[in-house]
Image (cartoon, rainbow over all chains, first blue to last red; front, side):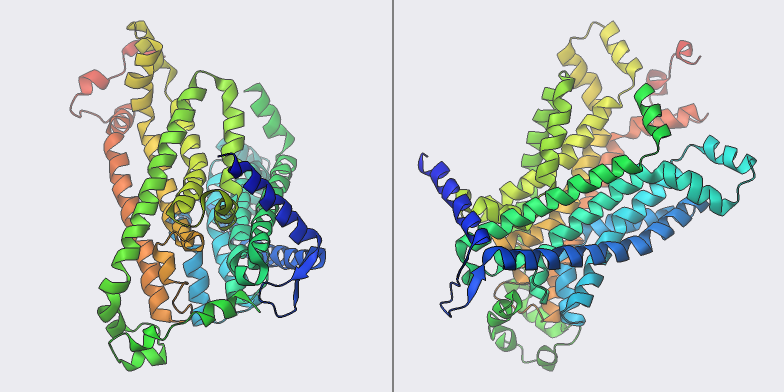
Amino acid sequence: MTGLPVAIFERFTGAIDFIMEKRPSQLGDGELVGGPAQVVDFAITHVVLSAAAIAVGLAIALPLGVYLGHRGKGEVLAVAVGNAGRALPELVLIALLIAFVGVGFLNLTIALSILAIPPVLTNAFVGIRQVDRTSVEAARGMGMSERAIALKVELPLAAPTIMTGVRTSAINVVATATIAPLAGELTLGDFILNNNLYGDDGVFAGALLVAVLALVVELGLALAQRALTPKGLKLQRATA
Amino acid sequence: MTALSAVVAQIDDSFFTDRSEADCIRDNGAFCFEWVIDNFSDRYIGPTLEHLVLVGVSVALGFLIAFGMALLSHRRRWLIPPFIGATGILYTIPSVAFFFLLLGATGRGKDTAIIALTAYTLQIIYRNINAGLANVPAGSKDAGRGMGMTDRQLLWKVELPLALPEIIAGIRIATVSTVAIATLAVFAGGGGLGSEIISGSNITFKTGIVVAGGLAILMAIIFDIMLLLVQRRLSRWQRADRAERSGGGGSRGEFFRRKPAWTAQ
C-alpha cells in the first residue's frame, strides 16, 4: 500500500507538467500537445459552449416556469419535464443529436440546452408557487398589475429556489460538455477522451481541470444565489 | 484529431455483417427493426444486466453510507454542514472526470465506475434522510419520550418510520439519476448500456443508439414507478392523517391514528 500515495503523487506532478508545458503527442507524429495555450483554448471552448447552452435553456425555461407558476397552471407539465430530464441520459442525448442532426457547436448547444431546461423549469414553477400568498394578495391590494406581481413580487421571493435550479442545470451542462469532443467540439474533455493522443498525464490533467471548473462554477453560482436572495428573506430566516 | 475521429475509427464492420442483410442497416434509417430483432439478445442483454448491477450496487452502497452519516449527524447537529459540503463536492465533480481521477488508484473497470456513481448518490440520499428526520412532528417525538422510550428506541420506532417516505423519495431520485449517469460508465471501462452507444460501435448508427437509449430510459421509468409504489405504501399513514384533518377519515385503524382532542388548539 505504500506505493499508492506515491503513484497518486506522481499522477499529480505528471498532470501539472502536462498543463504547464507542451510535449510531443503520444502518436509520435511530432505534434505538440498540452501546455497552457492548449489548456486555455479548450477551457474557453468548454465555458463558451456551456454558457451558450445555459443561456438558451434559461431563456426558454425561466419565462415559462414563472408564467406557469404565476397562473398556477401546468403543474403536471412542470413536474413531468423535471422528472423526464433526470431520466434522460446525457450520452444518449448527444449521440442521438450526432446521429440525427450532425456534429458541431450549434447541435451541441441545442443538446446541452435541453439538459439545462428541466431543473430551471421545475424550480421556477415550484418557487413561484411557494411564494407566500399573503404577499401576493398584498401586492394585488396595492393595485399592482399581474405582470408586476409576477416580476416584482413573486420572482424576487422565488429567487433562491430558482437559483438552486440554475445551479443544477449549470453543473449538468458543464459536466456533460466534457463529452462534447464526441461531437467535434474540443472542450477540456478532449484530454480525457483522447488518451492515445495526450497520454495518461493528459487524461489525469483533463479530469482535474474539469473537476476544478465544475467546482468553480458551483461556488460562483452559490455566491450569486446569496447575492440574489432578497434581504427580507434572509432576515426572516435568521429570526425563524 | 478530434475524439470523434478516434471513435469513428473504432467502427467495426460488424454492424453491416451482423447476420441480417437488411437494406435499412446500410441506409442507416431512423430505426431498423430487422437489425434489432437479429441483434437484441447478443448485443443488449449483457449490457442491460451490467447496467442494472452498476445502478443497484451504487445506490445500495450510497444508501448505506448516507444512512450511516445521517445517523451520526442526527444527534450531533454540528456535523450536518460539513457532511452537506463534502457530499456536495462529490456530487458536483462531473462523473466522467471522477472516473479518470480514480483510475490511478483503482484502475479501469466496474469498481471505478461504482465508486464514482456511489459518490454521486450520497448528496441526494443524505439530504433526504436529513429532511425526513427533521420533518418528524415534535408531538410524535414527545409522545415517544412520554412513553419512556430511549433515544435509540425513539429513532428506530418513531423517527425513522415517520421519515421513511422522504427517505424513499431520496432513493428514487438517486436511482433515476444514476441510471442516466451510468451510461457514462463505459468511459471508465465499467460496461453498461453506454458501451452500446460508443465503444466498438458506431456513434452514428441510429438504431443502436435508439435501442440503448430507450433501454436506459425504460429502466429509469420502471425503477421510478416501483419506488413510487413503495413510497405510497409506506406513507399510507400520512394520507390517512391528511384525510382526517380535512374532515374525511374513517379508515381502518382510525382510532389509533386520531389526534387527541387536546392537540387541536
